[in-house]
Length: 341
Figure 1 (cartoon, one colour):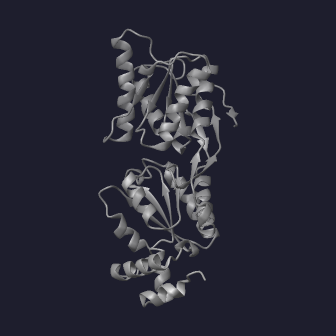
Figure 2 (figure 1 turned 90 degrees about the horizontal axis):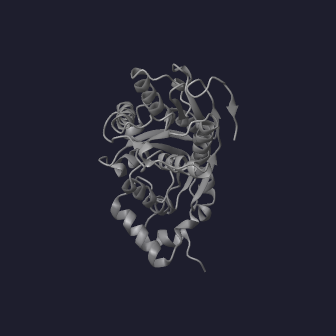
């Protein structure tokens, strides 16, 4: 006869509820009690996967570098979709920001979540801690082995941006990228390079620049554009005739640098961003960008958490992609058309 939770409770001299909390790694128990229950379950051969987590409280975990929504508005829209989906399903959401110097274990005990949605970049050590919590975890705008995730179709978005610029006759297209530790940025960088190959054009690696870490994102993007301009002048080489930036904020900062240098947009140099933040349509000139339903990322994250909790045996790596489309504005061409996927 298979070992039951009652058998574990009897062996550890605790209640069935205590066994459940211990094996789900939930708060409210001393470490000594938790360890006694886990050891009893191990000795009896009890399969903790038999316990199905009932999700009521969910935590939206965001890295500290993204928690300024005024500077980084992308995740504010993702969070909005996440909260809306939680309300519809009578779930209790909370928001937690963390970095490598913070005690994530302590914060998680205070939030006491039944499930966690991680949005954007997070250090491997924090991700490893989440894996050890034995709770449903879903990654949003991030991908890692062994986790379910929902992401923007970054490769398709980069292809749309580059195809748009190629169609306008632009050939010296620069790419302003950020840290490749960010999954979405690395995918957009690969899409940029692949687009040259697929167009049968020679890729010039000197046109790909990475922003400097540890400084303000706008200043870093502006510095990257200054380096591109200085490089062209130092080598007496043609200037880039277009820039594809890893996000809209970077594109807008780079565009301001070019305008300050007397370059005309889009006549001398065209710009395409990614994300379609509100500032993109309001800039002068308005920014061409790859847009995505950011709220859908948050909503799908909640759906994946519920699916994972209901079927833990299939909670392996699954990547869901949210489609994108290109919005053409005056920063690349005068026409104002939309190109769907």
